[in-house]
Image 1 (cartoon, one colour):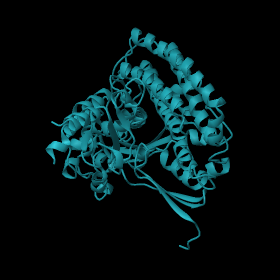
Image 2 (tube, rainbow over the protein chains, first blue to last red):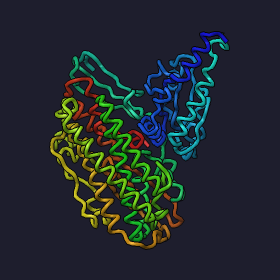
Image 3 (spheres, chains in turn blue, red):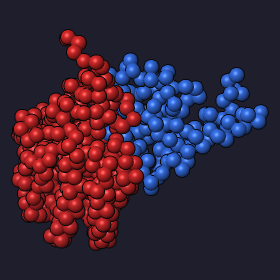
Image 4 (cartoon, rainbow over the protein chains, first blue to last red):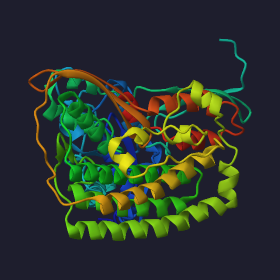
Length: 151
Length: 361
């Protein structure tokens, strides 16, 4: 591993930019995401910054059970995120549809049909600590040696 | 349409300040906003379609997931509607426990709304203080119900679990902490000169416009409409409830109404704790056939459940009306019109506390 690559690895593990998108959730997971920002959980101490701008994001957090409006919007949004990138599904909805995946429903889960999902956090909703620990354990794993392995 | 404006300014559906996706389309001349329109439909799940024909035990959990921020009140109003059809009354202790949990939920919702507003006007310090205070409320909610967000605490005839003496003591300590901390934060909000510039006189909603557009909840009460359904609720009448009203009708008044309602909620919880006697928390009962329209006061305003049940306890027909749709429309057509600056658009929109998940279901 080159010196440059090891430098990049160590910097990237402490600089994770996050965007979140709600594709038809009930808000429960979104407010648990917001709670991560509070000084009690303080995600910025781990180097995670929430900008909610896909063009500068590394991690896309997805909540919700994929409503029909997002059919033509989620893929372009995913394409806007520069490489290396990773998508994390938060809550039961993007994984299985949770209580909304029933006959007569309008939603179309899982989200992994539309974009590649690297990790899933089950729960309705998951706790803020679970969200933070998932981002922290996943992101450095994906971004490690990115330039050398994808030359 | 004839082009009469300089710029058509779309905001959203993904925007750093919005918790949920929605699109505001504004027509502006320079910085001046001529008209605005809100485009919805990004989180439509069809909950009412799923609910139809299902037993109440399932619909109860679906009702809670209409909105994650005010999940307790959806549970509360749905269960009270079902009780109304079947002639079930909660036990006395359960009625007070319901009020305690509902007021804790209202507190966390109002603190979150005010956090969003302070974050929108770039007062991040106050925003973070409020978000941290909200965690204290969430702790108490978790201590009583066992879950932070979707707790399914209220069931027909009673509640799921009791509040112990230790729990009540910890709740009283938390309420004192919230009162002392929040009065400090309210003083920061009242006296901050920059907050005043961004809030006072911005997003004016007159009483006439609020009545015409059927504004609900804190948005209406900030414009001088004394409209609060807790006035007619039997348990709240025992607690000597009086609605909070302000008359300015601007962003500042809406935020202050929410702050004052948090103080009011701590008072209501204290009264409920004092009045509460030992006793059973579950009364039991059977769901019968019938039709009812039942209203309750959500953190954002009037919430209506219109449902028909059959003798097996299935929900045959259900319609939900949430307060946010009126507030979003009154925001687009009355508050955003004639906003002096494009920077105020998001602040005005957030100050009406829109909940898109409630609105679209």
